[in-house]
Length: 368
Image 1 (cartoon, rainbow, N blue to C red):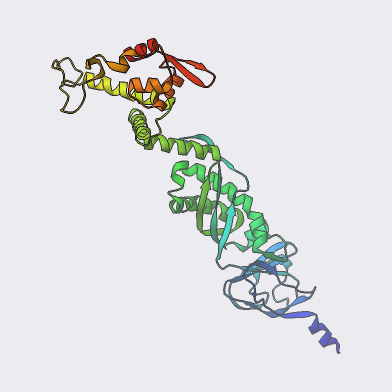
Image 2 (image 1 turned 45 degrees about the horizontal axis):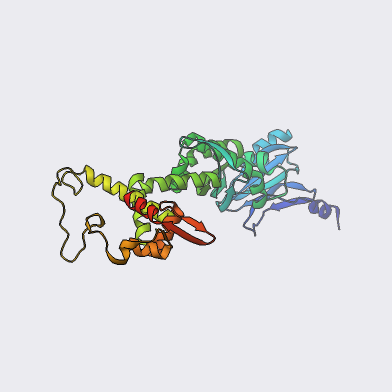
């Protein structure tokens, strides 16, 4: 190998990079410590820009196309190197290829709850996540603030680097937008569109990137706050509490769940309330205007108070009765007598597992 061949082997004549991946943001072209020949060809493809660095300082930025590298068309690098006009020598510089296409479907999310102020709940902790699309708009600023001197800066590294910064920007933008927490779930698309003008100026000025879309897919609250929201919804659905209680009592009576001491007490309370309403109504059966006693229909026995005194075996009721005997006297089931005894409305004496009721207790129960 001759001297000229050796010299040519140490010079770079063509600089190009074919991106065969979908996740590369910036790539430092490997020069193997070689010098770039004056007049070398620089090839920059679409969705790429080439950024030159010389001695740690940014030089020229080349857009897509084929460029011949001479001191005439790289003025910034020529100034940094201190070339004289027409001084044609090889030079060394780092060349970074930066991808400028749109990177879509990138996920963001809060690793910890974000504290935010809400008009309805005061200070609440909220988690949020979504997706965003972005592109690099300022290669110099992006390399300086985000990628650094990384030889091959990928999308996963960008996600790790920017996640906390994006969450911080989201929190500040959400506070500025002043959207209530209860309205966030119904305004996901509007929320992203509202946050985009607030986030873009910051990320463009700080990191040299621009968000094409910023989507909020979910905002969740702590379980205790969600429980409070559910209770508020339930209260709104109930409406008038008095009407709701009456409805629940009526449902219990109709479904047969009113048997037992508690059920009988509920039925009595409902009956008293209905009686009071009937007495307050003009012309009701218990109103003062109702002076004439109601005549029962044919075949229906008169009320107990108007019935003639019992004769026969019932007239000679023993002083001490069992629940079965008391049920026959009162004309009800034995289960009703036992429930009334358990409730204390009918006085009786329990001996072991057996109840005994006096005739006097039955008379007091009928009078009460």
